[in-house]
Length: 289
Image 1 (spheres, rainbow, N blue to C red):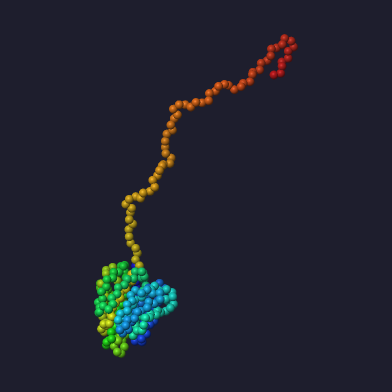
Image 2: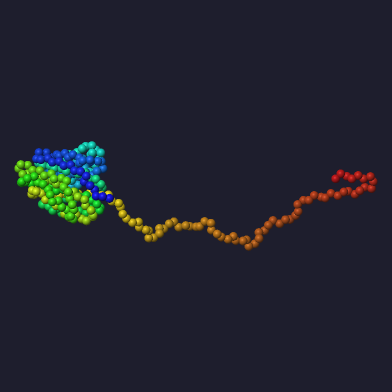
């Protein structure tokens, strides 16, 4: 088998419009059966808003903090998703800033997705206690947060994972307005081999992001052939006992005394033999028989 692949990504940002809705186009070449992963960051000063789960998607992590709402949704793509061309994400209220990254994954098994998250945890590194379920996996690491005194648009770099794994950035969606309010939203991905527990993840932002920072890590596992052995039966099973045996060989017992037969008491009737009468003295003719 091979590691799952992040095949394409689509990004969208909305800068300080007061709306709590954002629309993200499908990643390139999205096909029915692909796995879809959506990360969302929303910043509302002093009042975190709940991000609604898009119809048909599964909410893997969704938190509304004092300043930042952060969410991760997943779904296996259908023909309807492909034809729709995009997905819309909305919050329960408004939002000053909003960013979303939509990722297309191929070569994965949906049920083997695993998650770890950490919110309002201060600066990176963030701790993780997540063990891949198969030898070949895809790791997605998402970082976000906000601040009200940014000197510039925050950008991400220095992604790292423990154990050391090569990570490639796929989304960097920092936003800032003229007053210094803004958010950071960044995602990196990498192939991960083996089943050693992942214990930490980190990123460096160019600007301090001190309001409700946090991170989500997602692991997609590859299909894997099952292995095992056949256990031999140590004791023969009990079958139905045979009550008798057909075609047995035996002996015939001879009669000790001969049986009594019918005794013949007489002869059958016999005819009387014929004799010629005496010859007369004169002119005798032989009589017919």
